[in-house]
Amino acid sequence: MKLIERDEYLKEMREVEGTPDIKVLTGVRRSGKSKLMDRFAEDLKNRHENANVIHINFNLIDFEDLQEYHRLEAYVEDHYQESCDNFVLIDEIQMCKGFEKAINSLHARGKYDIYVTGSNAFLQSSDLATLFVGRTYRIDVFPFSFREYSTYYAIDNPYKGLTQYLTEGGMAGSYLYRAPEQKYKYINDEVLKALIVRDIVRKQKIRNVQLLDKLIDYLMDNVGNITSVRSITDTLESNRTKADHKTIGKYIDYLCNSFAFYKIRRYDIRGKKYLRSDDKYYLSDQSFRYARLGIKNMDYGHILENIVAIELLRRGFETYIGVLYKKEVDFVTIRNGKTNYIQVAYDISEPSTLERELSPLRQIKDNYPKILLARTYQPEYEIDGVCVIDVADWLLGK
Image 1 (cartoon, rainbow, N blue to C red):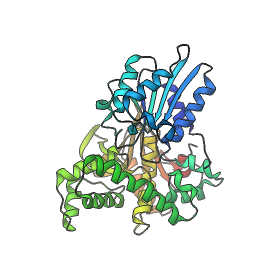
Image 2 (cartoon, one colour):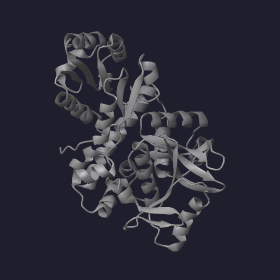
Image 3 (cartoon, rainbow, N blue to C red):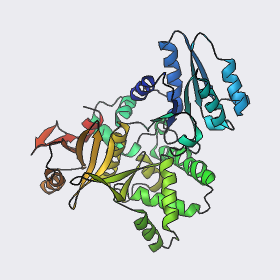
């Protein structure tokens, strides 16, 4: 398989190198965590003359004897070198029974720089504080961005490239297959089914798998729509699916903790406050929707909005849905005290569509940047103080 440098993740791993935190690589299944760990191990050896990298990959039979926490800690201790910088990199940590005891003990010794990856069933975002005694630093690993996708395929026309990316998505394992049917089968079998069965059904001991499946279909079909636990429950019950608010709320939490979906809250722009009711849910990769539901009734505008939402999270922005009077701004982003307002549209060639997309941004009275992302196929320009940028160029960081 062709490999590309995932520079932003490597940069972040280097920046926290040497800190006392336990570094935990998280993200949806098959997003590239293991490959990133392999690359970081090489990087450490290339940059440090005295690096002692203790790299354990439980996918390999070589380390089968270490699948018990006493033996895992003993192995690391046996490979410690006094005169070196000692790095411990452990992939698929959940395959070691009682792994948290070994990691906590190694961390307490204060002589190792520790990095781990594992199944989302065991390293869900809500579990980290209870699993590990020491402070953890979480690095969220997403599927390939459009920039990474373009690098992988050496795309020279970003506008055509984005059309491909809209449906192919960022699950790099699927790129090895030529036919779309084969790509989606890989995504459905290796990612979605594994995530649902192993990461959620087994760990959470879910009995009503049919309800979970219908909830997933609903959320996928309503990407980019404002929704709530109550409205989802009511819709499912109206379609003769027995559901209750408490169960739906728990199932949504499980899906978000497994990084299948990301919840984006609403933000009152005028009142400068966060709203508790009604959220949006975005898929960690848009290809999940195609693989599970096909292209019937596809709303490409919402799929493009999904891509932008994940890109904003990937870039480290606090991201919210903007509410101004009765209008909605697709995204309000905040970082280092600076705010941006972003509207996303697939096609603004019709004057009425352009006006509809500009209208919410025009009503915002502060001086923070206002951006409209769309498929314009032309360089950036400005209308009434709003920067109009082709979304392919924006995704590439131009």
